[in-house]
Amino acid sequence: MNHDNLHELINRYESNIDMLYGAESYELFKWCALKCWQEEWNKPAGSFSSFADRFSAARREFSIFIDNSRMHPSNGIVKLCEREPEKVETLFCDVLFAPDGGNISKRQDNMDAFLAGYETLRQQYYPGNWSFKQDRHSASVFLAMNAPADNYVFKSSEALTMAKYVDFGLTIGAGASFSLENYYSLCDSIVDTLKEHKILLEKHFARLTERHYIDKSLHMLAFDLMYCCRTYGFYKGLTVPSTGKTIKRHTVATPSAEELARMEAERQEKMLLLEQEILELEQTCDICEDISLLGVQVSSNQYGTGTVIEQNKNVIKVQFQDEIKSFVLDKKYVNRPRFENDDVIIETFSQYAQAVKRIESLKKQLTTLQAGTVG
Image (cartoon, rainbow, N blue to C red; front, side, top):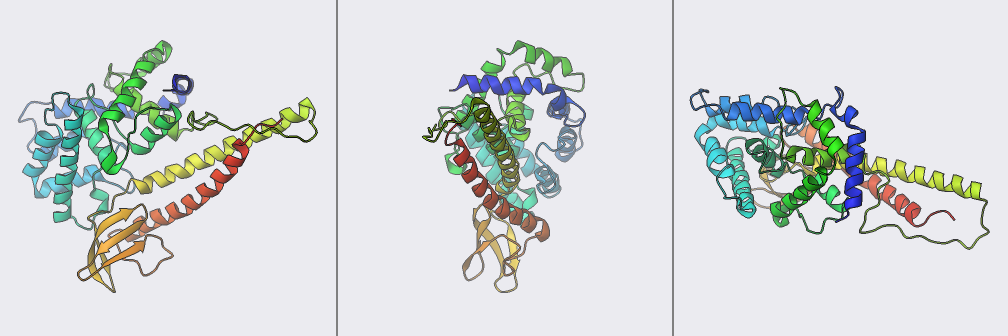
């Protein structure tokens, strides 16, 4: 593991802490959400008239933790509580939060069982509403809210990017290959390194008030580090250890030292600008890649009503009554099936296709610039 890169990223987090914790960004909302959940969720039995009321009170400070303009998983839970309150409560209390004796593999099984059980209910009552779907991120948030000293919030893009830059030795994976145990191992390493940054910890805890949960385990801070490094571009200029840079020497006449310095400064600036644009575009793609359409009902003038049975980013397969058809989700394809809130989903995936194409072009330019230093 490349601890030099990890220390540098923590230093960049500390250097920007005024911005991160300030009113405009206010990443401290995560600790507000944690305090609210702990206080409301753990109130004595009988404090709420229903599980839905208990959940609604506990998630009050969630802000954009799991819900955003496109996805509304916590709203989905509230709506399903109106239909099957006992089943939803069981999914939380007896499945996701079931005791596992510290066995992380068992915890992942519980998480997957929670997601499968919830999806069965969603398909039964809201088959066309893709925005109500849950994923491993939302499930991990609930786990971290319930037992913050034992769990970490997981978000795929943030985790994989951090693992790449610190040269983490284990595979976190995705989909069926996902390993919660390996992800927790990465987070444990981050926590151990955070403990070496005494000044950062002093600044962090000094910003917490009675509105915030005092998380001495540093588990939320470990996630926030990963989130902020990616969101605010703290990876800029940092070399990926597993790839590094290949230095090529030129045989042409050697420019002056001043000219070499100017050329190198220009090269570095171009690389930083490319990295920043790639990062911003990748964040656009993340939104799309986090949207699961499996099990969502669609309608087609030609084929009737169908259900999405397979998805590869912006390409889906739909099971209609008599056949299976594949479609690309892009507004330029007018013969595709329609979703509930169709304009939102199609605009999102159309932007995704454009971003992917642009990223490919930018990465080629970046690779050329990284091929060698000037001189």
